[in-house]
Length: 140
Image (tube, rainbow, N blue to C red; front, top):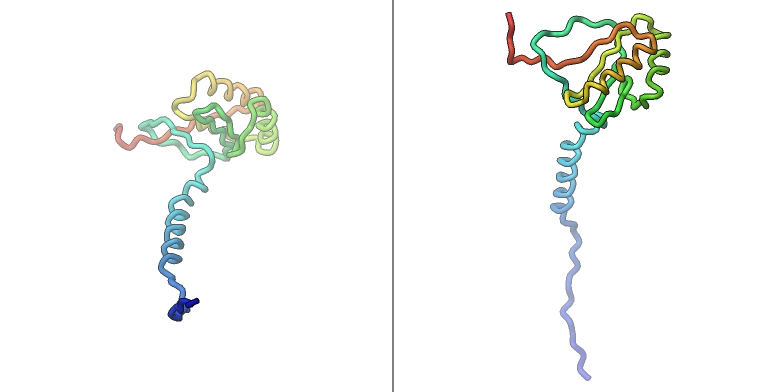
């Protein structure tokens, strides 16, 4: 029986780095694109636009109402039932606090009124509504 003799194959001793660098560059681009979304938070609010700038504001507590109806007190999600108590705690620590409401422009008037009612029940006397300055409408 004849055996086939294979020619001796030489093993490749070097590693091809091109695919590795391609993968690393793709991952770098993915991280660069997604990083800004990590720092925006889980919610976005589109404020209504107005022509007049806001005055300088004192110490504020921020109430954010998202389009989905979720309420955030100083960027922490808060149940509507707990809102008065948490605002009362803030008011006890800072009696002159201004509660600034950042409500999405698509949130119903009833939801904003309910949040304002909870703030008044907590004893808040200074309430503001945040708006985005519309630079297109200049009034003199």
